[in-house]
Image (cartoon, helix red, strand yellow):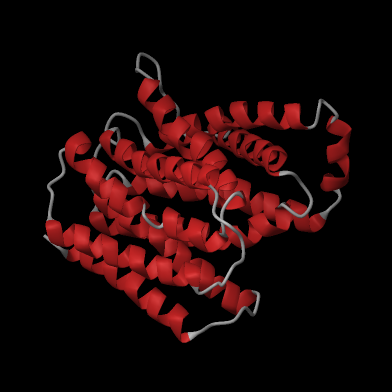
Amino acid sequence: MGKISKKKAYAAIITGNTIFGFSFMASKIAMRYCQPEVFLGIRFLVSFVVLNLLILFKVGKLNLKGKNILPLLAIGACQPVVYFWAESYGIKATSSSFAGMMIGIIPVVAYLLSVPINKEPFVPKKLLFAIVSVCGVALLSFSENAAGGVTAFGVICLCIAVLCGAMFNVLTRRYAEAFTPFERTYMMFGLAALVYVTFGFVKLEGKLDSLLPLVSNPMFLLALLYLSVLSSVIAFFCLNVAAGGLTSQQTASFANLTAVISVVAGVLILKENFTIWHLIGIMLTLFGIIKLNKAE
């Protein structure tokens, strides 16, 4: 598959991570009405149905005949299958501020992994700017003053999430020319639907009638549509598109843009507090992202 222009790749990665930034609010709404495993099963099933509808109406094309799909299964296993599980339990078993700081490390880990796996050059100042971005996210995270202890189990889960998030960036770049963005997105959510629908079914003990009240809840349905269509299908498709025009170091650097958008969304929509520390954190994060992408 041919590479796309850097301009389109940057537009795609910014769009995808902006959508992710608003997803935290939608997740908070959805989790009021549904257990995490059950909701993820519904979310990824809807996403997979949407992708199949795109194929049916000839909007998306899938051509995996004769191709080795193991790389796609590896990508899907990293993100969203294992990543979502590890992040959910990591947040549950630690404070949200600590979890935010840990997730912010993904660009640094992706940078380091891209050198041996994708043979991308090691440029010390790029790594420095990635660390600056992480410092910005850490400042944003700890500005929330969230309560909660930090357990060993939670730290292990978050380390797994960080590794999976980093590997996703590296692998999508590595196989960007072997599979189209749609093929990668399709397999990711096909695998996620299979795994999380099974988890959800077990969690409900087969009592699917307990889901009926959700169908008549407009707030839940709006959150579900945002997370299933925008935050899953469209956002991850954008990330897969960007992988065809940017290095994994560059795509990973934009992951921390999500934290910035999340804070801005909270202030503008939920009327949350905004302090000088939030401003400094945002400036550090954006500075690190911009400088990393400009560095040679």
